[in-house]
Image (cartoon, rainbow, N blue to C red; front, top):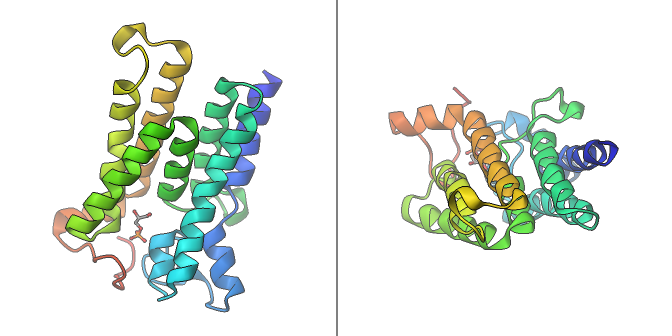
Length: 208
Ligand code: G3P
């Protein structure tokens, strides 16, 4: 039980590092939370016009999820899944920012790549195809994470009810990730439904 808690805590602490905020502050761009959507993620960092910083945010936010999973995975596959869940919670609800963090997409992709790479790769492809087709980051993100639990289940070794424990746990993590990301995109979902979601790189109105 101690190991379970330690893995989740490790994930949470790594996940709670707000790279988008740290990088934009270090670059002298002010507080990313007062720019664009106010989010601390790569999509919003791109709205500052600094593509390199946005890419670094994407890679570091993704990387922290992957690193948490890989470290815990040295010990046990169950711990790896818990660390991944912890990283998602850390990114979205970081104690350092009064529990107001990011939307979890980059961390979700990094976590999925480390926990079950075929699912992670396919989710990244879904994101890219949707982003190329519709040019809206949030729509691409929502589609990609919605695909994760379906793919996690479909690509498991023993699909349907014969799933082994680790498969089941991984599919459950994918579902957990999808639910968290959808909850944090409530403002985006409302704008998408109103047809007001801006295209990638465009400035946008405040959250609402
Ligand atoms: O990665 C977050 C993305 O899906 C939406 O971000 O800043 O457009 O709300 P944003």
